[in-house]
Image (cartoon, rainbow, N blue to C red; front, side, top):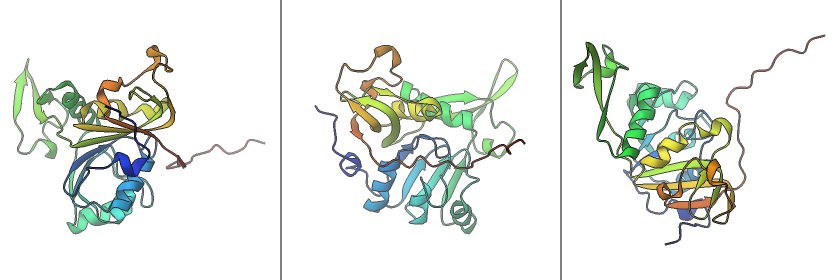
Length: 233
């Protein structure tokens, strides 16, 4: 069965109201820009989105927030999005904030076929409310369930028609663990090549995890915050 799709609109076919989706990226680095734009255009509603963060007001996942397409956001850091804050404080959107390491490990657990993990992160805080706590060797750990996502949407630098992916630099971030974790994984890539053209030693995500792939276009690759050093005389 071919994994190759013509564009983002075709690749997100089957994502419907109420689905749970993972979106790779960290800040605005390595986010699936084309698929997010396609989801905005498709106007699917009541989504549960799992992502490290919620983008900014006018870019990334912030586009879906602006159209009120997200019912619940599961994230680690959300400090750059005023619309997110407004919807949270007004009660328009449910939010689950979790430690970043826990977010990554719950993705990894789903990819490994594990139902849950134990982690010390969050013990004794609001994160632990209502969760099982167990003691191992004198230290307390929280039980955290693996994620259960209908779709995982990731962004890679280069991929082949079999779905093998290579990420570039820090755009690697959450993309590899999320690619493993979705029931259906959609990958958009900047460069798409034929099978066999990638160096096997350079592949980060094996194609067995990827169900759909397409070559994206018109990437903005915005910088969330630009900090520069003053020019010295």
